[in-house]
Image (cartoon, rainbow, N blue to C red; front, top):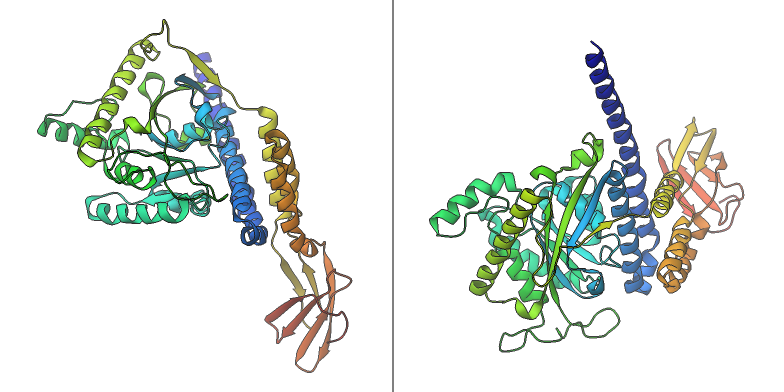
Length: 463
């Protein structure tokens, strides 16, 4: 009986914790995503004036949103240990990242482990399944310029054309540096059997912990973003100018990322949200390849990509047997490093999100018989983003961004106002509502009982 009560108590605590975490994350989404969208609307003049600064600011806020997602797993005890090459020195170079795909938690893991890699997260483009577009974070990814790809043979050729057009249109213009894709084209549990049958039919290696990758998106990215000379070899510059007018060097690296979960149990997004699993460490292995070592033509690229996933299979098999990745050639032991998040910075970001959500309440009208009186409430967010950008500038030595954002937001400062009581005067069938000291003056012209026109600016007084 005592054991039964003890188990019931533990189960009750897990359920209570899961409910509290879900409520917090639901509120977190409700305030953070609308605030991100609202600030970008306010910064549209900056986009016209200086698009490079606008997309830099957008990237910073995008990184903050991903840091919030990372914090969901981090506070539950889900941490990351990194192995292999150190990718931080190449954080400002252009790179294509290929990752094995086991579950939805792979994306959350990448969001966490790339937080301390300089500007990688804010200048990153993701390739993801089109279903992700319809999730709560889909709108953010759409604004950021990520690409949603539709799986299946019926859509494959068109999707590759759409991908090339998307890269041409958004990758350079928004100063993206890293592009992340999952070449397997689906989760391991869904594709393993099909992949093994294909491998057996074509005398390819039998893989258990990964599946054979698909070539299409990888080939398009390399052909579009690599600096190719007339003879087809990789050159030094693409010839495409970046936002500062300098020629871009094109892709310089392929970063091969292998994600391994304890006991080969992948972690999904539900685990990150509810936190019902005990604390666990996810292991991430990096290996960097200079772009000159990567073939561009389809057949040799296929062989090269297959070889990378055979190596992933060996890495994962060794990890699941020993609990560690194998020692690199020429080294005595495999070094690992724990990836940590700054709790103070996470608290600042979360506080900023909830403060913005509170201040970003939309304009509302409260009326008691329209012909008698109307209460008008216009309360968009004050430039809290400037405070956070100033802190970010202090951390990254880029104060120019905060200054330009401030000058852009000056256009919208007159809209920052508190509650206003507006009284109406009935003249025939039309109601003219006058502001009580708003700056600039606000005129509400009501036609009938349903239609309301809002005018900001102009002289105050009877119209």
